[in-house]
Amino acid sequence: MSYQYVIYEKKGHIAYVTINRPEVMNALHYDTSVELSEAFDDFKQDDESWVAMITGAGNRAFSAGNDLKATAAATAKGEKRPDFSEHVRFGGITGDFVCDKPIIAAVNGVALGGGFEIALAADLIIAAEHARFGLPEPRVGLIAAAGGVHRLPQQIPLKQAMGMLLTGRQIPAQEAYRLGLVNEVVPGTDLMAATERWANEILECSPLSVRLTKEAALSGLVYSVEEATHMDRPRLQRLFASQDFVEGPKAFAEKRKPNWTGR
Image (cartoon, rainbow, N blue to C red; front, side):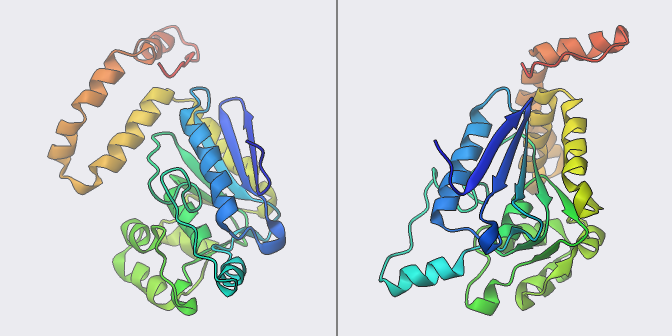
């Protein structure tokens, strides 16, 4: 697939996804979501891609969210809002997308509405110092329906989440870090290097162990520790039958770096 609104690249075991509409602060219209869905489907299916990074083009915005001007223009023409499906998902990863590989959001500016919802759907968030986060949908007669109304209260204290959700208030990167939304805040010029550092630290681990860890952690959120641990048994069987399970202790004993295969 050729991309017009997204830049999709692979370097080693890292997949890079860049929302490429800087002229509209990387706002998302339907065609952008088509391309993001295609890119992330490819990442999920590619055995050699172990970590993904998503960011926005330029230094002003990660994504300003839903392209309201495009929505208004379509409405004025009498066009019906396009239906999203399992193959075309808003923002690529905000719903109906289950992936056990790590996804890191490199937030290089404002992440509002659907842009913030993409970041919330990622596993880690690295933010530039000038980044801002918010779900302003109620201010324009909408709700954060791409997961934001649910993910935000799961990731920060309820009262803080409700304060943001009910007012549409934006918060700066340092406040997001204090609330636990962000893993690290760095100068804008250091953002991609810092995000790659996190990605490379993940790549030092067995990709199979990482995938099973993410899968177990997320699936266990709604269960007690005892119930979740019981559900881990099939995952442990997969781990024990893998090449990486043999390679890890062997490399440690031989005092060398492991040669991970993810198998």
